[in-house]
Image (tube, rainbow, N blue to C red; front, side, top):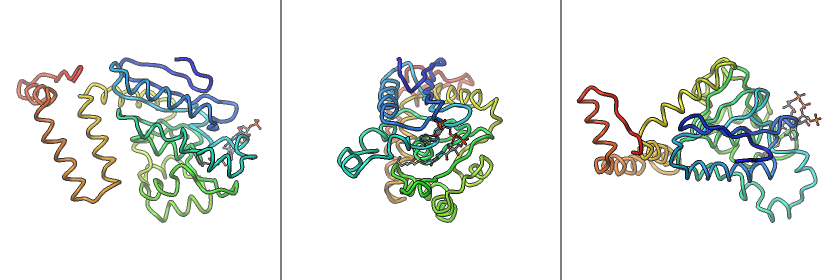
Length: 258
Ligand code: HXC
């Protein structure tokens, strides 16, 4: 896969998609979002891949939507052109687990894109923020919605209204990221986590992802009912047989292709 604004690697069953506009701190433009959708869908459909990592550079996951591209937009370009809706949310359709790995700036649309990943691993250099208010706009890719659901209203309002950046330690304290790792070890740690995930049954991993995401869309009773369907259905799959038989036989489970 060859892209202008992305770098692609695979490590065994793990795909790594790297946002790559280093001169603009990975400011997210239309072409990059089109390419990201294309890469995500290809890896989601590739049976050799079990987990996807989305990352940026050492300096920036992404410093936001591309201000230079947006500056002259009018309402026809945004509403009429379905800006954001058109190509920013492909990641939400990906069924396989997606880990976001954040080093450096993760701001505005960059933070919103990161929050669409299933979980985030941050380098100790990471800085998160929603500074849209400073450039005269509201967030437009879920910042006012996913951030309060993730870190709570007080912290989210503080970040959104003051444009204050939080560091990796504060991001971990507030639950925005699952782990913080020294910058020179963060990809190694993320690859290890992704490899672990990719060694499990893909269908079970996808079911867990879908069920967790359901928690944010429905009531507790309905969510538990939803989960229970997956749990019951698991007993009709070879993954359950392999997992439980392997445990009882005291051998490692082999979920290859399951
Ligand atoms: C376009 C950007 C950019 C952005 C940085 N650059 N962020 N270009 N859009 N969002 C460019 C700069 O213009 C500069 O280009 C180069 O990247 C390096 O940036 P500097 O500002 O020189 O670096 P530094 O002094 O280290 O400051 C880093 C920074 C700052 C704090 C991250 O760049 C910054 O505040 N960026 C904007 C952050 C922001 O407001 N994001 C939200 C955007 S709105 P040159 O050519 O001069 O070297 C948004 C809306 C989302 O995201 C809603 C829908 C998704």
